[in-house]
Length: 419
Image (cartoon, rainbow, N blue to C red; front, side, top):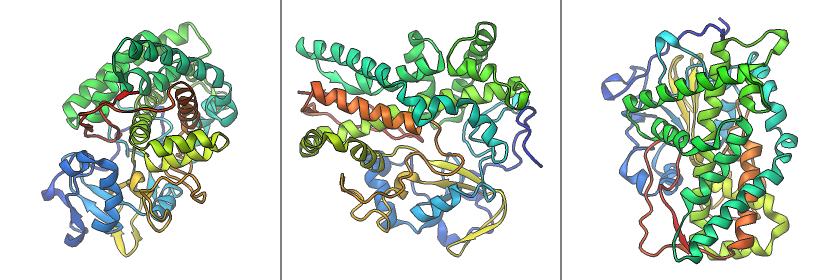
């Protein structure tokens, strides 16, 4: 039955949690409690943990976690296949965010499979296409330099730069709010809601945060319906693909998905990259020496420091690498681990700006590839260029203990820098 996003119903596939809910068809030798996203070894050094998965885990295994049981796939080849075959690995009901079953909605377009997926993408593609995001370049550079003015003034006064709060977060989030047509004055409150939803690992807290997001966005959508503007929220609220206006459920599910997806991922990516550069001055110097190679430099940094995962639900029984998975099983493609696959990226933990070009999975691939990928690349590129013009060398403040928060978007909690 095709998905009716205008009249959604909760997915029929249940979530299994705990060792007592491992399905009978899962071989005992493939059951693991890996600790991905929540365990102490992961939180001590997440990317090292995921790079080591290729030595410690089979290519496909069944992970048991308090956040839900599911198959984990860590090979680049398997992820490429799965992400490009939504008729097998469906997105319907695959996101982990809690919703009221009495007021259910789909996250659009991430939970909508072909053929309906494209009509939603078409609404916002003019904004997020390569040509669309290039129109934002001047605006992004101005925001970067405004933030750097403040940072340099604070450092000149003897203070430390807290990168996550003063550049890593405000740069991409402010640009995103500009695009969406949402108020800059609520930037930090929006981020707090997203952090609670994405990092609490407590479904009650996640649900409370989802309620706050829901109440705010429904109000914002009504405002845009009454007073249209050039922002993406207004564009979605007034869209009429194929001549038919979107339903309230479709509008809300679309805006809500963009809101959640736009507030944390680029922020976390930049935190990881700047931490690495602060600890590797030779790489900073190499970037200074190769200004014309900035695009391939950014691509390699995105491969090495990708921050999130991609969930699916099996829409049919399927066998891969001799592992038989059943319809309804949940699957996570561990994208950072796939970007460490030594069969595709030799010496995968090494940052090599001359690495032969291969498909990286920082933004997934296929019909559900990240809509914001071009924007994210541009933000990282401009953020790096403008920072290095004014702060050519920097390091982590002595004595800093880098800490990571549990959850599905990976980045250091704080990053105090000195120069």
